[in-house]
Length: 318
Image (cartoon, rainbow, N blue to C red; front, side):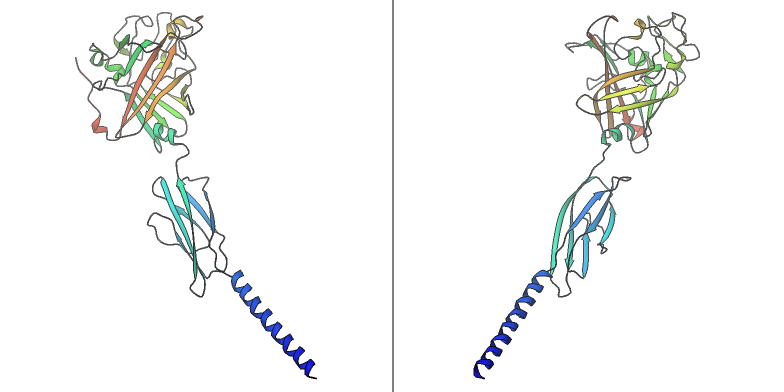
């Protein structure tokens, strides 16, 4: 009887130990854990979508890192007001007041940042540079090695004032890939291309010395393509489309071509920056003759956009 009693006590004791261990294990298994994942919205790069994978919590608190109001849902979205890097934290709190915090860094960036520099949020207008005090010129031509400048508008000449029909030209780039060119109804009758050369004339008469109608170089709506990478390109697409000056085609000057008016011109993007004055510099390297193996010279164009239109210098006068 005594042995049976001892055995019973031992079994009860073992059961109590097992229950205690089970409770401890259960307590450990139910420790509150905070966790989440996020993704950038495919339709809006300023919007991030968040989903909690927290366990054993009673409440959640999202801090999106930009002083916005705290959110409490398990799945939520947040639209940021500005590009940048944000520290997002999710606090999961259990019923007994214990809590866990999980943190991730969220980067909000424009996947089309270079395009935005060119077109803004909807569109952006560009004109040839009028202020040459910094050593940049609206139009510049020189040898391919850039060892010198052969000629430039505003370099030791009065061509800024002498070519108002070029200096008033305007290119408007739209986010949908459209490029509008506004000639203001006039153009520069370049020597070697047009009769009655080297004066401003009306776009109503754009027949060149060969009898070709070059009216497509006047005002019109075209397309463009911005190609990013190590060697970025800007393509003006459509009959007569160009940027800066119609004289330079993709790899040769147009007097060497028949027809002169091309269906597209491809430029190297030398600079594309944003600021109070945005700057776009494009360049077309050209061969002296059609059969030349390599380019020997370059045409470079500097265009600007003013965030405040009142900052634009007036057209120079004679």
